[in-house]
Length: 361
Image 1 (cartoon, rainbow, N blue to C red):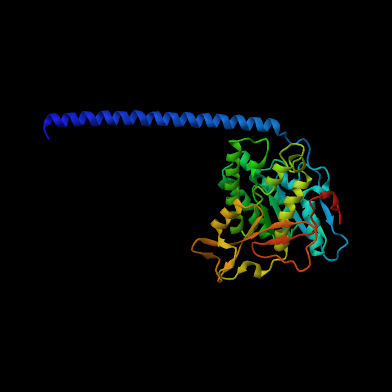
Image 2: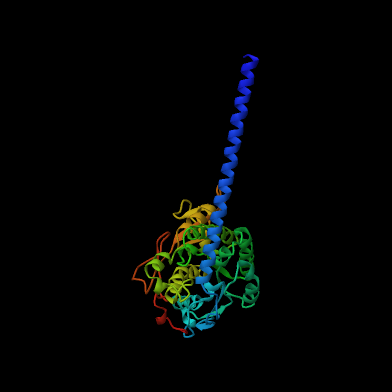
């Protein structure tokens, strides 16, 4: 190539490079502007949601006490820890709180008295579980139920940080001899005052938190139940009935549905023995723990627990876990009806109309 041709090619290359650089700079600028605009929009929506969703004005009613005192035997000790969803904020009577509903259902199904202690605190983040656990372990609980995660999402706590505190709580409770059932982070995208696009992000953040909680809790020896959008369809169809007065927390009926989803796992945990941790090779519902956590986060009402397959805790994809789809059935089970893997779980002792559930059985 001639020297003149080489000089022309170089000038052309420099012009192309400058044009590409300008376009790249423009693209970066537009992306930054779009991100800033999106952030401003989300911040504005979050502020609007906070104006609509009032702060807790009074603590929820306590439901501590003995349930099913008429039944024989030593009482089962149950502790409830977590945030406002565990405390039952939004209801007015002790019998409508999640702890009371779970204690009533457990007592009726196992025909034994249940002693309930509620340590959940409205507004609690996962980092606030430690003092609750301090108080709970002194009661030597048989089973602990933890509902946590929603406030971590709204406060944008990194999942790794929130989960670290949750795992510490689960391990301490397990070391104290308690079975631990965790209701994972609910789908905040189902809450009406949160509008798109914040609603879409809230749903994504909620699922990420729930999946991280599931993996960590099962590794620590606990059980999880994904709450997800369990109440979402009902909330959308009957918002005045399913939401409490603040349009953010569940109503008494909403809490009853959540308790009905948790009750089968609480019963399974209390009745667990060595065999509960063993699943036959190729059993339905068995996944690697990461796969199980991802699936549970997408399907509300799914129980996840660690199992052994072929005598081993782990396979090529990590720890083994078993999923059970818990579709709550209210009222008494039909004769001969049985629970199966990824099947239905008939319940009694919990009703969609909490006014029919006794404060003390």
